[in-house]
Length: 482
Image 1 (cartoon, rainbow, N blue to C red):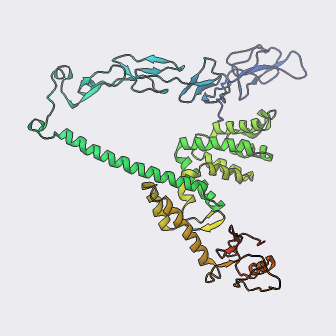
Image 2 (cartoon, one colour):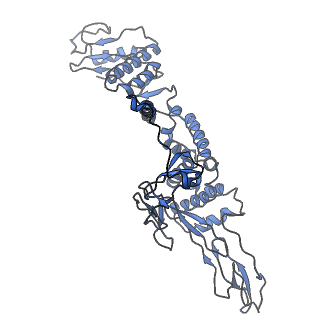
């Protein structure tokens, strides 16, 4: 069965008849081709309905389309009844025609939401609303006596009834004189059991808050670092697998991924406008669903047609746990893996373990490694951000230089400093260690003859410094010049 409601059977005729007077609900009377006085009954399409028995001229009516913002289907209807829409939680219909969903107003304590977004006062003693909210309706108060307990404090509309912790045999009689509250040894000058329990709970609460705050700051720091890290296609595949796995388990997260996917697909699909719906509706239970969808949006512009394909597919498959996996598979079949990577990049911050797991990263074009010491410093930065900031930059710079020197073929060669001064006539020395003046050509010979050259650094006095020997396998092409 398709996502549209089934047709309702009735007395109808698919044969041309001259004495046909009416058609049953779910059908419309159509004139036979080539004749003027013969008619037959034709069933309404999947997007139309006819609730009444009808005669010639009474056509099938279009069903409601629930594709506006914050709106979804309550009932898809059938060939004999119209579809019904509903608004998402926190929204309501502006009027009874169900054309638009608008946001609810906030209702104060003691007031609850109604069907059309207005606030109604809760009946004191029967219902209550204990928070300012745009979703909560008035709730029924707890019946303490029904649970063999006494009502210690009755509701005033802004909170529930407060029931006793003890039970009684006959609430109507025993609740008039409740048993005395245990006072402990407070009268003897010591702390009561309740006070001791409160202190212990308070200390535990403070410890839990501190631990949670630390974990939150550490996670925030890792996500911020992961956001700027380089990530290759292999890790994007891992990221896509984790997004698919989580989407299958969590419906809110699945809706979030599908919403982001729709935006990316609308912005990037071009030549695949015909192959995309074919793959999306290939497994639909209704035969030739792909042709029906394409026919429905064939007169729309490019982006609106893609939006229509995705809305129809989402209404059909959104509740399925494998919806995200199926969508990614469709994008791969139309050879648009790049869209999958763009979708994954939007959610990469939620999976820092994929992008910062002992990864090699690029910082200003230089390869560096993360060490255990850097990971420990990350924790220290969270606890003492002001004290460890300067040490952090010095440590990273030293480790970066050390790594490059270890990988260089001539790491044992000492750094050179060349004095670049005006050359005197007749001085043709090519020795790089000579303290005499060098011409630009002679300085170029030094760099060309060096096995692992680096870019020259000029100071304010015009001296040329070779600071770090670089390995050709990890360096960018440079050109020494005067």
